[in-house]
Length: 381
Length: 218
Image 1 (tube, rainbow over the protein chains, first blue to last red):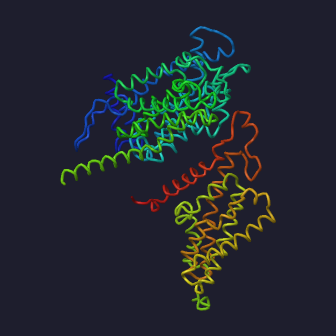
Image 2: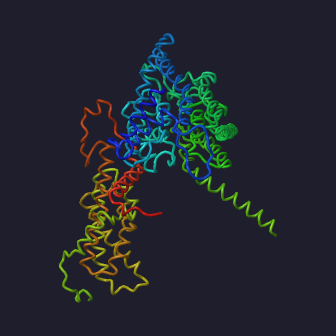
Image 3: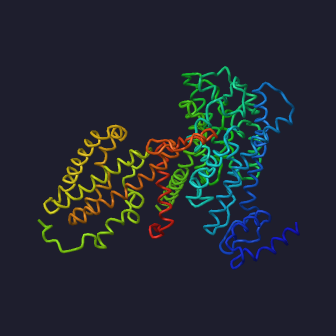
């Protein structure tokens, strides 16, 4: 460790202003602070001082994603062999899964980080660490069979149009990972929906529909059991299938105080309320499925825990968070049931509410100001 | 008529050249004034309609500018908007009939958007801001300049959208078959109107990055 520190300190003069590689200063800075917690502190003004900085925060989110990732890798292999009616051991499944998932992860990180570094360099900023999380979220919301060049195009689109045009990490309106997925969903629908893409190299005769896909054709009897949907042994995007693995991640996020429990709970209640309303209505088989099943199908759980709670694109005020979360769950189930051709209601509803989050905050603040003004006037009078 | 009192000024004096070139870049009706966005979104999914639309708008804006400039001293100020609209509407009807006669297929693709040239704010804006107060020759140049400024953005957007959205240009496929065999696919998002907005946004971004004078202060 000390050796590394000394090595970095020795290289530093080359990269600061006036050194040989001064153009690469932000690249150097990024690696230095990635390896060691920086000793710089803010010099003026009152600040809340905390032991962790952005890089450490982001790494915790990545760690929270690990259960979903590992399960996803296994499930990709499991689904593949299942569709070919083979039942190999644990390791071949993991091996096949790695072969499918790892390239997607690598492409997403390489493309995204390259763009981030290029922008930081040309603007003279420090490299921001937001992409550490986005780069892991993007592979997890992709179908296992997605062509790699599409992942690259979508990542580039999400980082440039979703983030850098607004000024980089912390300034984006939309969640970058969902922007990437939405881009693919509209640009290449044949690779992002239907029942062909959810199992890697699936045998032709085997139905690869996700639970939402079965519901689309009102095939409720073909639905997998609640238990397998909860465990995640169903076809779907790489990281979204296992509600259990996602809950493990949620525990990490809530325990470290990084993910907002308020948002998660309000998304869940929004989904449940809408599900129950549809149960009351019950006009078709889709409306009749038990409300709780909406929570374990498709991307609902994943979106709730990892997407809706994105601190940049979510509402900031406490009351705003509840409204924001509730509407996400509510609209997600609404889109699923009313427009089954867009099975990923969760993606669309989170993006929609991302856009409205600042507005919600604005009105929460205004109403608070009004309330206090009234109180102040009452005291004066 | 007032045009008789014209001072001797070279046809392409520096001032007149500016009328022609400014709208192409620093005073572009779409990327700087952000006018005429509706049609830029609606007709640019393919290159051909974008091109025909551009020609139509150039024709309407040039002749409307000329006519209004000739009439400018005879128009009672209180009804000038109506007069301008009548002129534009007659020209648009002419253009529409010509399109129907000679390029019927494109005319069908453009459908209602030819008629909607009447409501294109660029044209109304030029008449009100320029032709009402300037002589015919500068008005013609201003019309050509603004028309071309509108046209190049439309054609650029149409080019990108058709190339990546349909793999064709002017209806001919340009992306080789081998690409598709290797798994390339046309980008369906390019066909949807939001992508036109994003492409216009990128053009604005590039333009302002190269010319910081255009960046508004907030």
